[in-house]
Amino acid sequence: MPENRLCAGWCAMKNRLRVLRAEREWSQADLAGQLKVSRQTVNAIETGKYDPSLPLAFAIAQLFEQPIEAIFKPGDDKSTG
Image (cartoon, rainbow, N blue to C red; front, top):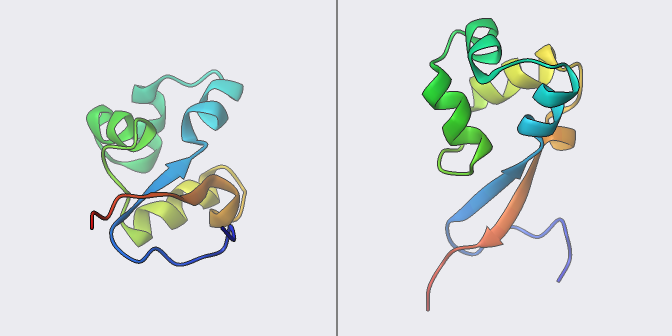
């Protein structure tokens, strides 16, 4: 299956947020403060329970000085049927 495929149904995102945060020795609270979101939001993004809004994804990419595509990638297709 091609990596750049569009998800036919709902598709969770995979991300490198935890790795990038750990490389900088930031806590979830540290990152949350810089992004002006809650620590729970950072945790939910890292664990794949929540996909960030487009503005938040851009803010994350800008903070880590990486393109969005280097941080977020389509995950497994979660559609049923």
